[in-house]
Image (tube, rainbow over the protein chains, first blue to last red):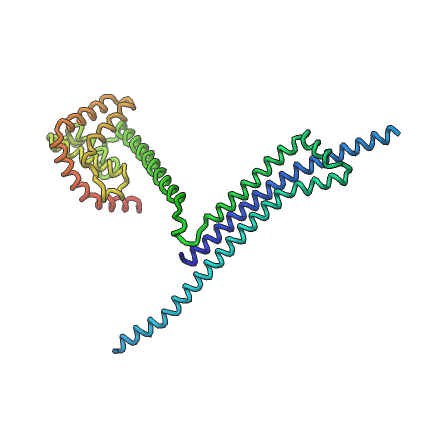
Length: 57
Length: 284
């Protein structure tokens, strides 16, 4: 195998890795959106709970 | 040792270190490649793991709002968060596996790339190519049928390779040339066989005709196929002529075989001329 072919293979790996990172970033963003929305719901529920406690006193 | 030999020896001696240097640099590159590949596989593994563990850490922050882990778990189940996160987790896992497999598949030597799966892929590619070739031939067959059913009957058609082939077949079937010259039985078959052979060249691609039999044993089926195509297009009269000609050729196998043999030699002689003609035509 020549130096050029090895360089081409290195480039191929670079492309695969870049593609992996791009897709992973996307999936992590989706994951983050699911968790953030859930935590926000929890926060709102807690605030409502506190408001009810304050209102009842 | 004379002067010339001395010069040759010194030249060899100069070339040797250069070759060695080139080999060393390729070896270095291969080592660099292996290191790079290992690094990237490790990076894929660690990034995949980090992404998979990320939700657990984030849910820990729910404790700061004032929820116990049991309460968080209950909310998660109620809102189908686990299901959504499981889907996301599976996608991340398969993405990691896929990237790792693809990186591992990039090899340093050509011999290593010849794995059974690569060989299988090559065979599948060959099958795919054959299918595409067949589809292409089918399209060309339709073009021919369209040509034969059109009203193009110029005397100059012999000069146009593809159309010329069709014209020759048509003339052999009609029993006379477009110029009105009657063809004898043998001439008719030879003319038809030449045309059919020329058509076959068009069907299989002019460049591949060198090593294969061009017309031998093929003219009858070709004429039949053209007839079937014409019949399908509604040109019953023309189709009938094709079928009768095919029948005549089948009834006289020796005559057909001799005609084919003669046509085969003649066509092969003409291939180079046709190639030159086509080359010139495309350069114009």
